Image (cartoon, rainbow, N blue to C red; front, side, top):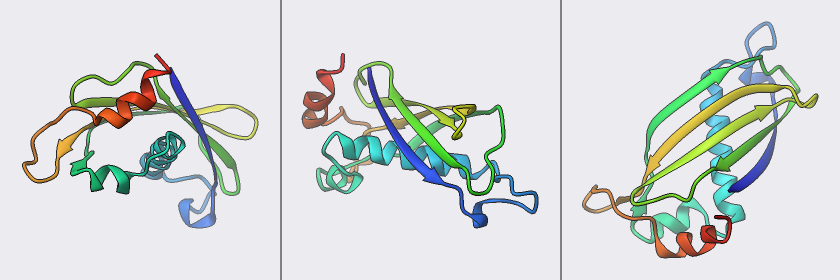
Length: 135
């Protein structure tokens, strides 16, 4: 299992008048977590795109348990519970506040796709090599 953690400070523009983070921003938090998880493996989305592969989000499920608030330092935990197979990768996410209270759960599915043909393709071998040591 591969796990990564990223911290984000909640700034005022992300909140409503009550200082609570708007729910739509959570998808962005999970994206930041995915981006940093891939970076920790030694790649960036830009590197993957240079290989001729794009990774669109095809499915997203989020559950909100508690609000994130202005000036909270949240931790986005990004988990690959299983080795991705074929063209699909599922990122499981958890978001915690500074008190380690679970705020949100998410499952986000992306496909590996050939940028030119827009057809699904297998995960690049270099990613398979990096991830295989975790499974």
